[in-house]
Image (cartoon, rainbow, N blue to C red; front, side, top):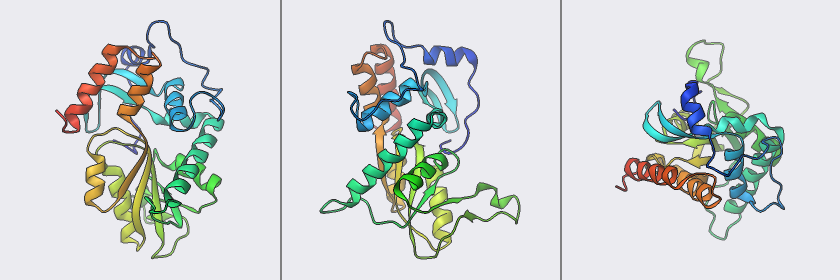
Length: 249
């Protein structure tokens, strides 16, 4: 499930998923691309996901995701400090663009909240880059009364932007939004690195939350196949799955 730590994948599945297409290789993940490289912005993010080994192909059953031919482990990105810093900058640029439009696509916000666990590190990078206070729902609050339900300083009536790494059906984002709203905070928007196009956007729409993905899984696949990093067979199988789970076929 998005926001929770996924179980370790069997070594045979991992090997099958991470092997690049013939004639291609991953770049050194310790050397992320810079703004002057051929893949700026969200295309840089697509390349970073690939280079970090976050994109795997095989057959995966994780949480509510059943028999998916592609698995994205975006938590691989946080082990590279420069990549994590660049993600903070990318989130900052994106939110400033969306709030600075003549007709803003993103509501003004005073706080940023990371969706545990996958979004917490990204929200921290964003908070440091944009100089916006950070809070987060504590999933352990139900286990012990010593834990705060929401960690960090806030006041009822403040607006919070939710940040997560991935979204599939939207449950983790919605649970975090419910916790924040129950404390008197307002949640209008959520930004994620990648939308797996598994119904999350529709679920958030129903809850009055606008989703802002930096990438969709389809745009990621388009990038990878255009760069000949994956095979046409991997591309077609993944697109067929996405079409089915998103209601497109």
